[in-house]
Amino acid sequence: MSSKSVLVLGGGIGGVTTATHLADRVGAGASVTLIDRHPTFYQCAHNLELLTRETIDARGAAGRLGALAEKGVRFVEADVRLIDSARRRVETSHGSFEADYLVVALGADLAPEQVPGFRDAAINLYEADGATRAGEVLATLERGRVAVLIARTPFKCPAAPYEFALLTDSILRHRGIRDAVAVDLYTPEWQPMLAAGEKVGAEVARLLAERSIGFHSEEMVLKVDGAKRRLFFETDEAEYDLLLGIPPHIAPAALRASGLTDSSGWVPVAAGTLRTRFPDVYAIGDAAAVRLHNGLFLPMAGVFAFQEGLVVAENIAAAIGGGPSAEFTGEGFCYIDVGDGRAAYGSGNFLARPAPEVTFEAPSVEFKRAKTEFTNAISRSLTSTDGTSS
Image (cartoon, rainbow, N blue to C red; front, side):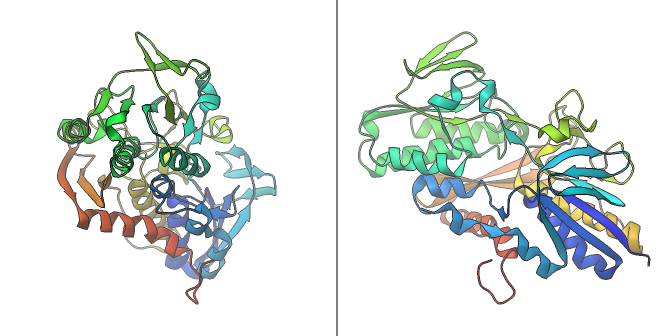
């Protein structure tokens, strides 16, 4: 078996999964290199723990990507600047790289500047510092109106904004001041967790209603007036005292300039294989646009990035050394943290015809434990072989 080279761009769940699984499968049959601009791996899911102050230091939830060397993966800390998809050549701040196989797992960038006033007025819940600050403010807030704002779709982790709203309610109730603080959620979606289907959306809406959390659907924010603490939508306005926001998401600049993206702004791929239109170039995770049979797109979620990474690794390994290929089936699940030590659970097939078939199970302590375990699983994979944190 001749040695091949594989280049993985992005050190999130999908990229790490692809690189480590592939290195394990092919051994000396291929050199695997992972490039990311950050030296550490961090899951946005930990931001929920920062909000509730279960975790007080985001660095404690991070893993060092350099530890991937123990698993046979070379890590390069660099910015990806240019991608030549046809030649599978990548220009970075650390030099040029070429490979026989290229896996793009660069994720989605946050773009608060796309909504005037958002950056200065909103606390960004999708940044660790923002989630920490939100938790600190909620620990001292006495009265007023909290607005959780989804600025645009799509966004990472479709359950997260609803979890932030439910956890905000829980924090305020445990402080005994919930009656003095209104909580409202605003979203461009017509229902919560749109791609999961009507049943799941109705159940999440019911959870919000039970907690007296105002749910305002089909609200596209146009600008935020931080001085007046006011949100301006297409046909409506709203006041707030504390604004917790999820900013617009866009594909990274290098990806948008690569010719891989289409009019959706993301990278179209074959649903079963995650292949792009370029030979031996794959895209997985948040940047990949997997169209569902109902016309919507697969949600940006870690569980899908993980499975996509396994599929791509298996198929590249099969191409290098032979063996069976794999297919992404669209099976997925999601835990929804509702506070009070409980989480709900949704699962099903998102590639089912004619629409996703997803079930919803009521919140329980067991689902909360399972959520915590799943969130920590990938981080533990970046632990040194002697069992110490990397």
